[in-house]
Amino acid sequence: MMPFKNGSCLLAVVALTSCATYDTPDNIAAIGTGEGYQAQYRTPDVSRANAGFLRSSEINASRCKPPRGGSGGKGTGAVAYALRGERLSRNDLVDIRIGDDDTFNGNYVVSRDGTLKLPFLSPVRAQGRSTDEIESDIAQELLAGDFFVDAPRISVRVADFASVLVGVSGAVFEPHAVEIGGIQGDQVDSLRQAALGASTEGRNLSVALRAAGGVRPDADLSAVQLRRGGTLYEVDMRGVLEGRNVTDVMLIAGDEIDVPSRGCFQEDLMQPSPISPPGVSLYLSNLTQPAAGNAIAAVGQEVRQVPYGTRYLQAVIDTNCVGGARSTSADRSSVLVSRDPVTDVSIVIERNIEDLLRRADRDDFDPYLLPDDALVCYDSTVTNIAELGRVLGLAAVVAAVVK
Picture 1 (cartoon, one colour):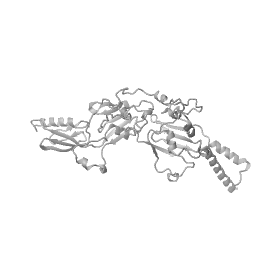
Picture 2 (tube, rainbow, N blue to C red):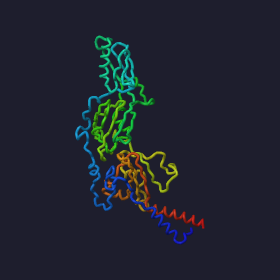
Picture 3 (cartoon, helix red, strand yellow):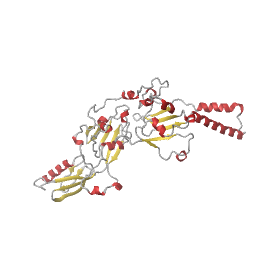
Picture 4 (cartoon, rainbow, N blue to C red):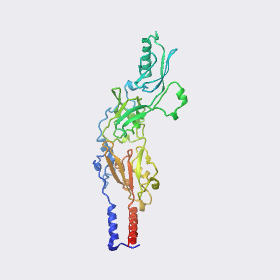
């Protein structure tokens, strides 16, 4: 292999080495001082003078607005009577039986206008109401129409709950209208369908929150707002993260849910729960050489899935960015690409993995991962030097051929 003339090989080494050095990624927010979405994004103190003093939780909490629902009333706090129990919605299937008279007996579907239409009777309002309330209205209609002298025995039972479309906005990861409830055709239980009565958990408030991507870490769960028919209700959902059996409201078509924000990152919300994201999908790249496709890179067609509440350091280990021979694998670094869900501004955080592994105060600079975060892993210094040698070797071969 022939060397370059006039010291060109040395110049190439210097040039390539300088190209391999990069500045710390810039961000619009003052990430370095803890003013990002979570304080764990801030830059580690190189001097380690503050090792052992965990301040991230304090920094996060300092930005929190007081909970709108107050400090009490957690878990199964009082919920307005209008939200309790089963409530009918459009397209629900209802079984109605009236004494021994077969004239009105049968299965009815709640109409698009939210009413039940029995023969010879005025439409009975059903949307958002309980079966007891509907039984009372039907009795009044029968007496008013002189069908009975005395109020007959009436049975109104739900035979099947339909799916409903509700709007979810505020401090959730994917605010949009979601369809919840209902059963797919291939999952229908024929015995349950034939039985009198129906039950479902698929139309609960918690299901709607999770269908909208789950609540964000800045959510105020003390006063989740539910607007129904022009009336605004507030539901305390804090107990769901504390192992309490909260009152989970049953939703109807047209409900609008808004989750207010406390304006701060709450670490206690970073845990799996019925209202949290089902997990975190990580987009990753940890190749020494960029590949032409996923198959060649052995990454697979899907991104890596990690549990909600996973931290940066756990993720880089899970994505094979850590470990190996100490002499060749030390001093690796990794970049976390995230997005502030409040401002919708992207954030890029770079960490020296080995340094973070050895810090006693690592939790201060070890951020939690959010849905759709991306990880980029960079190789160690030894690997970079070996790669530099490979490039120079190829350059020398090309120069020799050209000569």
